[in-house]
Length: 325
Ligand code: GLV
Image (tube, rainbow, N blue to C red; front, side, top):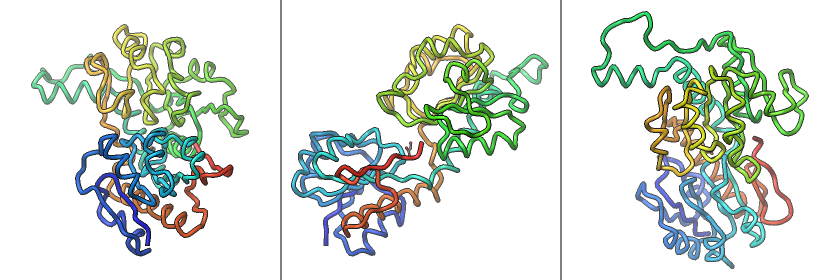
């Protein structure tokens, strides 16, 4: 029987795979993230850790787990909060939750595409605040989604799920990834895609190569009528530059679910016009969050059994797999 620490409360039934395998499960009953010292202490006392994207599993946490910790499973598909290289070096396997959140996250991305294009955020805020003076032919004039070109940056499972929705809405869909997908709609360079799109939606993992992928220069390549949607990771966009583009009208609108310094939201974005802001809820449906918890726990069970689970990011040795983005 192994000791598995779960760093934050999971949806009901989420830890069932651990219990079914007979492990000793130590759950943080609170829905508040551990501090770094608490995370270190938890790692020091466990064979496995199930963590969330709010946990920074860095070299120090992994050092605290040295000698005992065998696997860290993130209840998220993105794993930029885990120092995978340090884990690999220490022989600690890393798992994530690919595949189970694609459709739910694509739904949310599409919600933002629609809401930002049609200025639903500003309009809703006005209704609630009693600022709506009654119907007017010049009010809240958004951009049509039907007939628009959607540029997807990243074309993994989530990007492709957004593409399927976009086709149903009569959009023309193009995509860019570093490697040629060979699929219809592939655009070889990011700059070309940005210049050709009415709506740009980001679906890349956060890595050193994608940090501020949309910086001031890239944002300037977008059409002034364009809409930017980010459901990937906040630091993929330079928020200061984005706020500037929205304020000056060089960008029509933005729909954001993720931020550079969560839960802090850049004050200029909070005040920016034509902006829809959501609190990182891409995968937040009851069914999907439960599935994510189970998949992460199943990864732990498999690694502790000596098997290689399908959701392995790194085996803690030279074998490693990507996240499909
Ligand atoms: C959520 O942001 C995830 O990476 O699963």
